[in-house]
Image 1 (tube, rainbow, N blue to C red):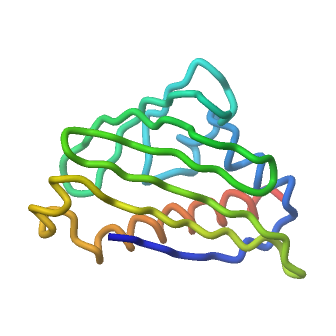
Image 2: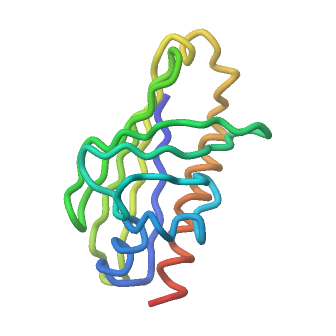
Image 3: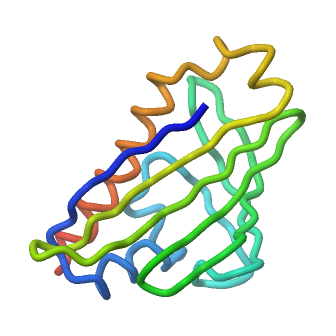
Length: 143
């Protein structure tokens, strides 16, 4: 299953990038991924974040492994948990009106194949859009 969403953020690239990568501020704006902990203040390559994700009414604690960070362009991370793998990519592109942010998440693994109803596409799309709208709000409200 692949969920891809886009949003145009009306702020400059440096502002959007700072909001996205400054982990110390995530709890202030990010309503999808909560209780983020990392031994670094900024999102960076090869780091691991622990956090709480609430795709449904119950919390799921996960470790996010940051795979690649290209400043002002790209972030990729993965989450692996008991037969489930999520690979999430974020692309940042300058636009005449700000920054186009693309979120693409690919879900795979035995649990995804066997229990597709446990990971409804509609709910994952809502969460992706919520994350992007939270980023937009935080970037635009302080620019």
